[in-house]
Length: 246
Picture (cartoon, rainbow, N blue to C red):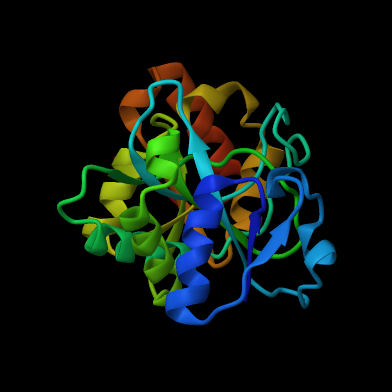
């Protein structure tokens, strides 16, 4: 496993300080932000298929106090690195283990613990997970949050649970987060409801292929009207992908 952050990222550096000091693990610092480090595996010298964890800040217009985990990739835009309509590989089982650790260790702290929907770069042929603190300078420098995220990464492992991709909901994937906690499901790539018009059969295939061990899809039913639901069902049926609505 390789752990990476940007030298100018205050939240990433906060987490990295505990990763190094308390847990004796190495963190690679990049000069630019990792979201723009295309094929980051080559830049940092990762072995083929070696897991990459990126420690990062999370920005939010609503300034949500959040501790998040998410996959990397793009749908029809690539304003923050990566390639349009391409996902990076994602170890959803390891990511869920991080999320569950955060859920445990952040009890009593005023933070929303959640998956985020798939977004931004970099594109990588290696599995990559972003671990983030949001969403202002106050939270970025919060030492308690930094320690929680560091410990959650250190103690994570590849949990033996079902992997499903998600479609629907908002950018903060609270419904899918609850599903993961309640039903022992690891969420793979997630397309929020705002990405519905970008969900071609090719991008649906990309989501499943790049979510390691994925067995199907779960769809937030109330995110879409009957026509959109029918269209999604037709695409998933034609691909012979199992799915269910929640």
